[in-house]
Length: 297
Ligand SMILES: *[C@@H]1O[C@H](CO)[C@@H](O)[C@H](O)[C@H]1NC(C)=O
Ligand SMILES: *[C@@H]1O[C@H](CO)[C@@H](O)[C@H](O)[C@H]1NC(C)=O
Image (spheres, rainbow, N blue to C red):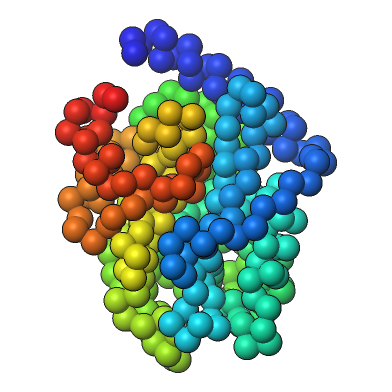
């Protein structure tokens, strides 16, 4: 795609996005979706929040993992307000026994479509702790705005001032990950002393995958070799090809590509599950082939 047509595309997408944000404010027809078990013990709730699905799709997912004791549950991301009613009902239908507890809420990053569910989740689930990468702390706690992040692409530098990505969240009950990657259980063992009884070591890894947000992380569910990718990759066209995250929402695509390459080189991932995925996961080989071909399809 030439520079001009790419620019034109961005303008169209930004226009549709802006129109969409206006629509997000209005009460929409409540849609309902269940948590679907995509791999054993790995469930996804996904709703298309596009105001004009005839023109573009924007599925938003949240993930639920069953802990090793069968009754402790771990969430990855919390959705946007538009998905909350459905997400709340879906979660309730998964946590049915009195022994079922939501113990941990992991965030991939602080953008509002991943964090708007946090306030009600913290209220409804008093045992739950929240964890994210330390490089995302200032945004998630509202000390910084994403508009302070310099971008490579002009569209980010324009849109960052208008997009509502203030995800100021309660700081109590939050804990952080550090470094390039690590084991989730081991990293949380001082914040949650009994963590290994329901989230054993080598069950879940975090991998720092910056670019879309400075502290963006992806999570690897080791029992199923699944990558809960967050926004390091998108898949929102009907061709179901892997895509870069939308450039007007992504300050540093150079870093995104480096993150994608590090993921492609790993041997512990079979399937990639982006947050914004019209399908049900892409094979890791799709990413490797796409990178080998220099991101042409
Ligand atoms: C973000 O929004 C919250 C609530 O709307 C507000 O209290 C807070 O000051 C905002 N944070 C920043 C950094 O502007
Ligand atoms: C994006 O990341 C690259 C690689 O780390 C860095 O060299 C560059 O300065 C970054 N760009 C911006 C605008 O921050």
